[in-house]
Image 1 (cartoon, rainbow, N blue to C red):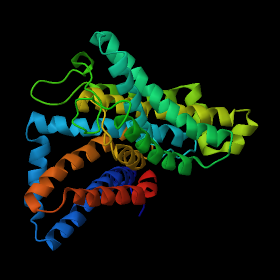
Image 2 (cartoon, rainbow, N blue to C red):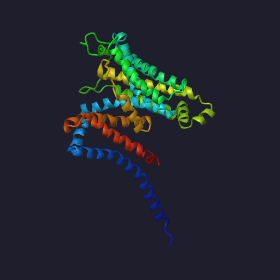
Image 3 (cartoon, rainbow, N blue to C red):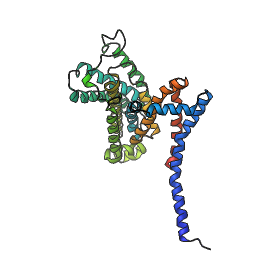
Image 4 (tube, one colour):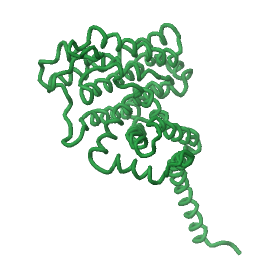
Length: 353
């Protein structure tokens, strides 16, 4: 007896529905699994994971101030994540977002203190943003030149330059940029109030998050919808085919690294104009590495970096609650970040299928 056509179509529909639901279920499982494993870690230390997770959610989403803090943390993660993702599309590994952010903060502070302090906000803030982008570009240019002219591995050079950048910022805040009224503390003079980014009332949230979202959208558009983005993606996927097609490989390498440095430098400017108000040796420490983590979690997709940056921002803010509620050090939250990364990367190939 032959099966009826209606029965076959219903069975095919059921299979299609299951195939569509399977990736969704797998994605939910991937997101929940790190929290389950971290819960076991908490139980081992005699901490109630459900109560702690409840406190963490309340601290981050319970009021506008907490949610604003999450967005504040997410802003530099998104920008430094884009700084890693853009070169990655061309087949490069830029781990230098940390140093590029620091030098961007240095340049923006230098111009704000010595040249822009008397300017109105409508002119001073854009110029300060350009100064931050310039600082990040200058620092990324060191990696780019060593890559293009010297043939050095950009992963190693960008990573090592992070330490040079930290010492460079330290040199300036202990010397030329040191506030004479700092009572020997190493930080710069405070920038003018007119150069501070506007904030949302009742929170510390500033317009930097809007800048980050706009730059993420622009980066996605360039990569996905323009001829330049097509060239970048071709070089990243098959360099030899790109060479045969006449693409300028070294020129592309140079400019995507510069563009990535500019994005990270803007993150440094936002930290100065939005949060710190002055340059310190510790400004933006570890933000570049967490941005690189956000890019890896998003598989270097500019729009997904917004989501992963937000997740890392939420976990970072929740780390304070973890320390208060459980007695564990706030750095324990990095275990949760690592678990989230491993599960996303480990399941990436299966999710694509």
